[in-house]
Length: 575
Image (cartoon, rainbow, N blue to C red; front, side, top):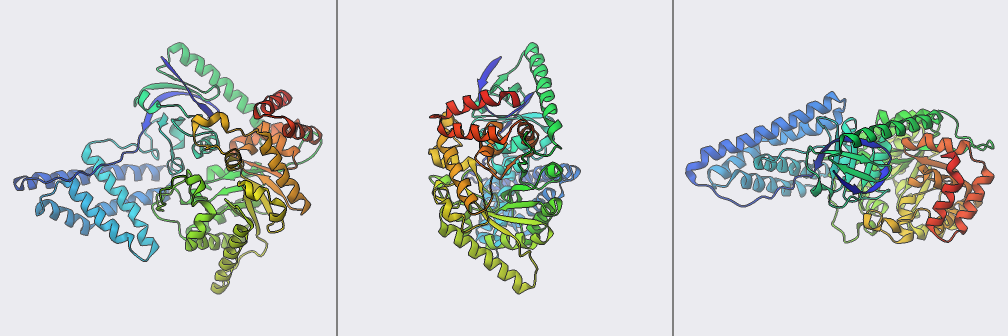
């Protein structure tokens, strides 16, 4: 029995077999063969094809059985690439006449076609490069005899252990078979953490060297309440974990009794509770009946797990689905927020020294006008089906706001030219996550209809700490009094203009922080579905007078730890 410590970012307890997830990175080595071996080597190449075909067919079938036809189509397309006549013929020629090994022949031919497609004028053709790379990597992995590790279709319930999970990994996660998530990196606001919480999957992040300390199939017990992982737990420990898991689930069931109640404080004040959504799946939208709108639609999840950028029509259908589900209630659609810790398989992004301070989110959209305009047109088209609010992320200045609004007007003009209707009542707002825009909130409030506080990045940029670095966990202080003061200034600045401010970062679903945010005058709270019941329970026992008292004290105390201790003491009866 060995015990490891980590950062518990999504509550829960689980015991199960380890699924060591280490994406295979192929290494193509130049090689030649004797002419006499050509028939055997062709046979090896055909075995590679057959192995890859079986894998793709199995994934496609599992996804179709799970009702995920869109993802299944990706793997059907990969089968078509695998047996593309032109590439297959060229690979066979390279083996038969140039006497190359099958691995080197596959590498050379695929790279050639990837370069050709990468130069195409049509962006849809250029996007096929990612498909080719994926199929090439699969062929080389099959040739190396390395079994596939894929989180989209797991064979049994497992504890997923990885160095890190990319948003594209979590977007395709086989939720029903993931008992818990354990990673070597990542903090409470990483996308692995956010997705784990929204799926109610226990998660323990920042466990140093865990991928080398655990082996595939080994049994592990994960305590994502206390922040402990136990390898090879004893029967007694497993029994203890089982009992504690039952107690945790009982507490969660008690909280869920508040799920359907109105978010009303003890003195009668109503604080609207909105939902953060990503994939727009039926399961995610099931929380619609318990919430007052969508405070954050993370549209980048529409782009994830795909080998091509979604078309305007595809985006329109997804946005329409969410807007129709919420009817007259507002749906706040955040435009594409890529960069930092979020990459897309369908988009080649430059490697940057410091991606969190680099070309990301709105800045990236400005550098890719057609991608930005396509999304804006799709959103505007969908606006006729509900109450759309459009929000721009990573805004640093009034110049950013004005430039983004110009793109929105251009998208409207393009739709008008095509005779396509859109709602004239779409509200326009900004994410406040950079201190520079927070400090001119009085000016920004004159330019837009609303604001939403992105507390994850606002904390990171205000305190100058990398929120993805587990070694800096003690410095990522989301109860820092300076942060609450900054948020208070934004809220009061917008209130003077009669405009609402919400919070859509992880603090919105944290009961301690939520109580302070309400006291600062936050118009509404937005959070993942897993936090809705807990926040409603908190509100039911809290008066506005008490919330204002908590907020004033949180802004006056000198340190984050003192603020946290004070809030825990004051709010413990309500938690």
